[in-house]
Image 1 (cartoon, rainbow, N blue to C red):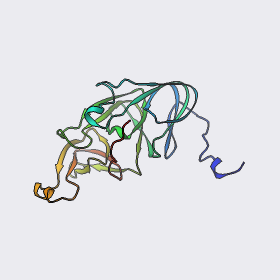
Image 2: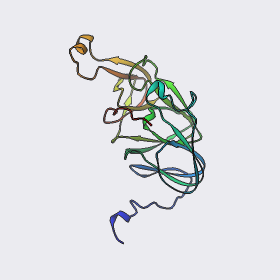
Image 3: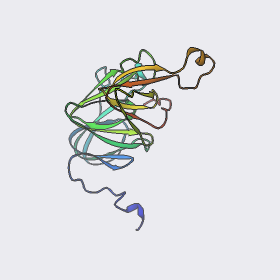
Length: 223
């Protein structure tokens, strides 16, 4: 049987080392030797001796569905083998987090990560009691984090001289060295008259990077 479908661009090649790698732009392969963490329902294929276990969803975990509407139910993957992860054909990226690094990410953009990473749900500073992205997940430690994004993300440098303003429904994440606050770009009178549809943004100041998806978030779907 002959077809470009069976070329090396598509066929899974032999694994060379444990851990995470891009299989292609829309999926991540993880060679498991022990334990790793992934978004529930994101496994599309696996081989080997692997067990999938739903993780607890208490206050100390990744899910605060009742408060945020942006919950991320997780599962642990244990054993020896390899698994492929993807979600709605979104673009995938692997981030290497080193000791001393800290990255805050919206739960909807997390696909999988090393069990060696620590994560904690935190309130976005300055976000008040409303607005998108009120709670984000902060990752620290040493390991790899698999992210996903609808389309190709924008990565925008932030400096003390040039703060960046981001739609709260479009922000994926940012380096936690940045200071955040909500910025209102319309007057109350303009909002009453209909406004531009861009009333409030997340303002990021300091030195770091912000990751933005090239579209606003679609309404939250139940997990």
